Length: 125
Image (cartoon, rainbow, N blue to C red; front, top):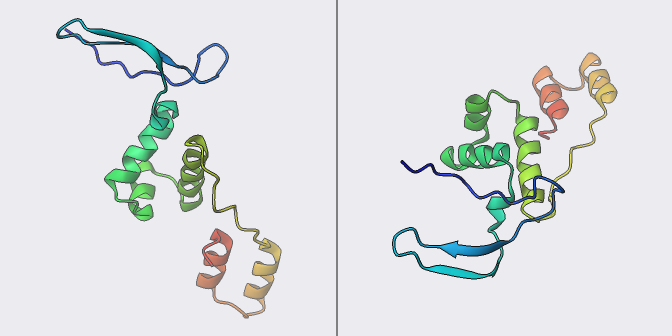
C-alpha cells in the first residue's frame, strides 16, 4: 500500500525554499540527479492550496466561495491576495480606505441608503 505524500516547498527548519535533487521512477528504477526547482504551487501552504482548490471549483464565484468556506467577502479577498503574494506576484488591490464615521454620518443625515452604507463599509463601492 503506497501513501501519497505531497512534496513540501519550504524547509521545516529555516523556512527557506527547498530544491529537488533526485527524481526516481518507481516502475523501472531510473534515477535522475541534479538541481530542480519546485513549481510555484508547491510553495503554498496546505491552507492556501485548499483555498485555491475551492476557488477553482467555484470558478472564482466569490459568493459560492464565501458559502463553502463560511467566510466573509473581505476574508476571501485577503486569502486570494495572500496566495497571489505567495506565488511571487504583487497584489493589485489593497484594502479600501473606508472612513466608517463619515459613512455613518451620511447614513444618519439621509444622504445615503442603508444598502449604500453597507456596500461602502464593505469596500464594494
